Amino acid sequence: MSVITVTKENFKQVAMDGKTVLLDFWAPWCGPCRMLSPVVDELAEELDPQTVTVGKINVDEQPELAGQFGVMSIPTLVVLRDGKVVNTSVGVRPKQEIITMLK
Image (cartoon, rainbow, N blue to C red; front, side, top):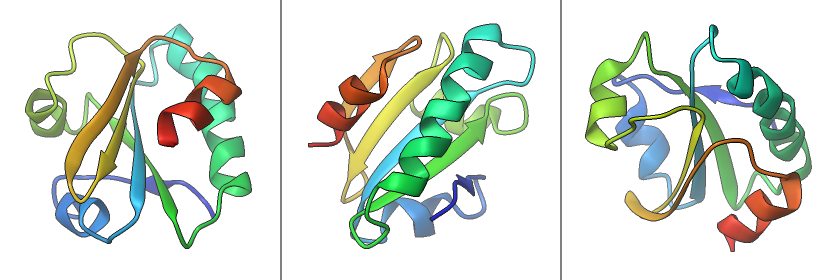
């Protein structure tokens, strides 16, 4: 599975697809985001696409979504189930910690 680019246009479809959703809020100018990005990409390849969707939201292009989730610092990871936030973390996280967030 590959990472989905999430926009306000496809957000509802992604959030309500019945799977656990990992959202990575990032921006191209953000150094820590560039450190976290390959980890998120790896997870997208390794996790079961039947149960987990991995999406990235560029906060510069999607300020409404960043505001909706109260994102003040990036990178921010948000885990959704049934469209509801069940977990959030700010900053770079090791892969294992992100996997734990998804459980």
